[in-house]
Amino acid sequence: MAADTIFAVSSGRPPAAIAVLRISGVGAIDAATRLAGKLPPPRRAGVRALRDPADGQLLDRALILVFAGPATATGEDLVELHLHGGRAVVAAVERALAAIDGLRAAEPGEFTRRALTHGRIDLTEAEGLGDLLSAETDAQRRMALANSDGRLRRTVADWSAAATRLSAMVEAVLDHADEDDVDAGDDVLKSVRREAIALAEAITAVLAVPPVERLRDGIRVVLAGPPNAGKSTLLNALVGREAAIVSPLAGTTRDVIEIPVTRSGIAWLFLDTAGLRADSSDPIERIGIDRATGSIATADIVLWLGDDPAPVEAIALYPRYDVRDDIAVPADRIAVSATTGHGLDRLWQLLVDRAATLLPKVDDLSLNRRQAAHAGTAAAALMRASQQQDPLLLAEELRYGVQAFAALTGMRATEAVLDDLFGRFCIGK
Ligand SMILES: Nc1nc2c(ncn2[C@@H]2O[C@H](COP(=O)(O)OP(=O)(O)OP(=O)(O)O)[C@@H](O)[C@H]2O)c(=O)[nH]1
Ligand SMILES: [Mg+2]
Image (tube, helix red, strand yellow):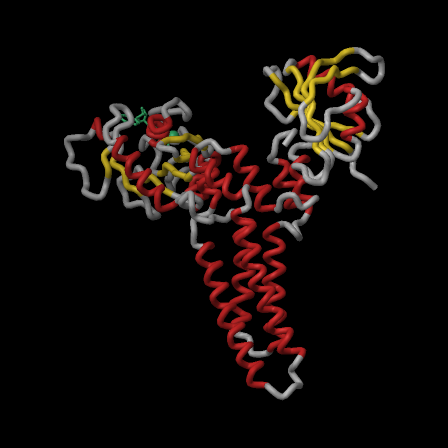
């Protein structure tokens, strides 16, 4: 059974000068014909009066583009209506389309999902596209653009082709196992094992690149320390607004507060936490302290505001410098004052320097966690293959590796993975 024909505004939310409404599916061209009459030839723009098929009422005068499937963004027949972008115009055209049998409004990300279903893009490209739509920094944009443009797909295709070729070599040896030249077979298996190691190492090198999430979601900087140390005040100073409540009372902050900011072209996520103390009897504060400890565990960088040594690796600060500058600043701590701004530029510089080591370089091939999990599975299988003496088991490990590549590019993606990815897309994409 053919899927529904879907439609949605793919440009921004109206009102706008122009609203691009896309229709995709088997009924797209027929639906457009019902509204516009004779359509312009494929890939040629034409202006048409759009009329409600129900009563012939004029809805808008619009530019129409027809793309015949399967060589389209979705892999299906696709029509674009460039409407006047007023709310009532868009609503009227959407109403008229919804009234046509077999047509319905698209779900978030459904156009892209169809592109994936029809093999127009693979899962790594869909993920890159999702990142591209949410990109806020230039580095995010460039990384996402490269991945949405098939950089990762091509690399994984190369890996997969290499593993498949090794697999075929082993099969050939197995097929000719009863023939005279056993030594030749052994030589082939030896070189298969050698190449399996080389491939596993190439994958491991990519796995060593920092994850793409850090670039996308921001570097997690957690402010931690004892109560009343000035964590919330410093957070506000760093992010440039009164994001967290500040008070002279110890134990003010309970929940973890997450504030995203962009600075120096880098996305940051600052987390303010409850002050750590062992002797709190307040049950709510205790929950806050547990959450603080959890945040510290997932931090990329910890800013420690205590006078005692930090419990984890951290940038040690000497906070509230303005009220205690009579004491010499310990050499291993950075004096800061949220009130006067003293030391904040130096702290930012230090953060930016750290970030450089924590982020993937834009030209690096960087994987997200889902991709890395499959790449890791493949690398492990190839490593095991390289140590396998039994050609049957060696072939089995290679097949296992090829399957992991298929999962990485979405040839074997589960519904859950797809729902999670496309749920993050906007409607009309
Ligand atoms: N003079 C001065 N006072 C500061 C500075 N930073 C914070 N304070 C004051 O110190 C007190 C505690 O500040 P907070 O930012 O609430 O401290 P906190 O570490 O978040 O405290 P909890 O949330 O209770 O753990 C407030 O009265 C702030 O005004 C500073 O740099 N200079
Ligand atoms: Mg606080």
